[in-house]
Image (cartoon, rainbow, N blue to C red; front, side):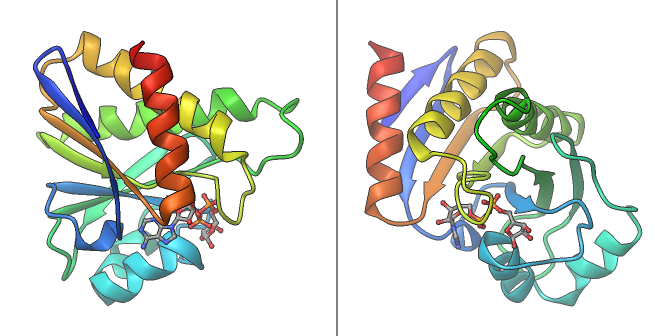
Length: 177
Ligand code: AR6
């Protein structure tokens, strides 16, 4: 599923983020930036030790922020590491922090001349953010960004498995309506 916003493409697809050919892919990391399971584990495994070597020099990353490294052996030239909130009921600023992950990742991409970015569904795995709400927030934040910025030509959400893909399609249909 795909929509055009301000001459940029926003696309949803089911797949593995490490296989994407966008200039940058985004990692759902933790505050240490020293690796973990889920997307983070797969990115470090596929990208090789160079990514971790660069991460060690970054002194971690606060929740809602984003930092960039090279992509190692990945097709993507860069990895933008962002740290989503752990969901604990929704009353602890989780929505603001999750929106900030998407916004800051796009700002870091723009600042590095990146024109195409692929995102996973941040916080909806180990960090337990409810997928429907996370999808709505992720898409509306990216759509708002694209409406006011011309430099990013393509933003791709790469959803792992049919249920996540369906949740994002439903959210995009509602937002586009
Ligand atoms: N490509 C795209 N999406 C994926 C992939 C993949 N290869 N693998 C998993 N997902 P998670 P979080 C989906 O747990 O919730 C790590 O240990 C997955 O199905 O990776 O932000 C970090 O180090 C889910 O929908 O990230 C942190 O400690 C989504 O990616 C913690 O997990 C996010 O799941 C971060 O938790």
